[in-house]
Length: 463
Image (tube, rainbow, N blue to C red):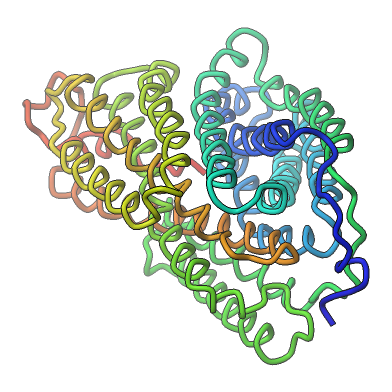
C-alpha cells in the first residue's frame, strides 16, 4: 500500500509566501554547492595546520563528494517517506553541526569524518529542495521560473565559493570556510520551520535492501572513479571498486524490480519519458560544466601564471553569464519547449569548446578563456534548468523526493565519470608533447595548452 488516509488529505505545503519558500530552497542549494568549491583554496593552509599527507589531503574534498553523491537516492526517498520539511531541517542540522566540527578540527582524521558528515547532510538537503519546489509550485511557467532560480543559485554558490575561500582563508583562517555555515544553517532551519508545512510520514517501511545496495553501489563506483587520479583505469585499485559498484547497482535494480514491496527507487518512474530521457542527459552533460571550470582553472594557473584567487575571479564572468541565462531560460521554457532550448544549448557547447580547444600557451585571457567560457556558460544556463524541470515534470508529489535525488545523482555521477575520462584524454595528449621542464615563456605560441598544463603539474581531481 502506497497511499494512506494522511496522503489523501490535501495539505498546503507551505504557510509563508511562495517567494520565501523559493528563497529557502535556493539558499539551501547555494550552501551545498558553495561547500564543494569554497574549500579548494583553503587546502594548502589546512595541510600546514593539520599535517595532512598529499594523499590524505584529497579526502578533505573526496569525503564530502563521496557521501554527497552516494547517499543522494536514499536522501530523496527518505524525504518522500518522512516528509520534505523534516528531511530539510534534519539535513540542515547535520550539515551545520558537521561544519562546526570541521571548523574546530584538531586532527586530519577529525576533519575528514566531519566532511563526510557534511556530505551526508547535503545528500539529505539537495533532493529535499527539489521536492519542495516540485510540490509548492504548479506546473508551467511558475515551476519553470522556480527551477531556473534554483539552478542559478547553484551557479552562484560555485562562483562565490572560489572567491570566498580565498578571502576567508587570507583574512581570517581556513576554519571560517566551515564555521560560516553554522549561522547560515541556523537561519535556514528557522525559515524552514516557519514556512513549510509538516506532513505526516507515510506508512511504508524503508526499503533496507535497496537502500544498502543502491547507496553502497554508488559510493563504491564513485570511489573507484576517484582512484583514476593516481592509478590507470586498468589497475586493480580502479577496476575492483568500479566492477564491485556496477555489480551492486545491478543487484539494486533486481531488488527494486522483483523483491521490494515498497522500493526505494520505483522503476515505474522510468516509464515517464521525461524522467528517463532527462536523467540520461543529465548524466551525459554532468561532466561538461565540470570540465570547463576545472580545465580553464588549470590553464589560467599553470599556463597563464594566475594565482588561485585570480583564476577564480577569471571564471566569475562565465558564472555570472550562467546565472543570468538560467533565469531567462526558465521563462522561455513554457513558450519554446524543451527541444528548442536543448538544441540551442548544445550548439553553444560545441562552439564554445571548439573555440577553447584552440587556446595555446601564447594566447591571452580575453580571446582564449573569456570568450569561449562565456559561450559554454550560455549553453549550461540553457540546458541544466531545462533538464531539471523536465526530469521532475509530471511526477506525483509522493515521488518528488526520489525524483529529485535521481536527477542530482545522475548529474553528480556523470560529472565524476566524465571528468576522469577527460583527464585521461588530456594526459594522453600531454604524453605526446612531453618536456623536461615547463615555463609559459619557454613554450612556443600555438602549443596545445592541455600538454602544457599537464606537463607542469600532475592532474588532480577537484573532488
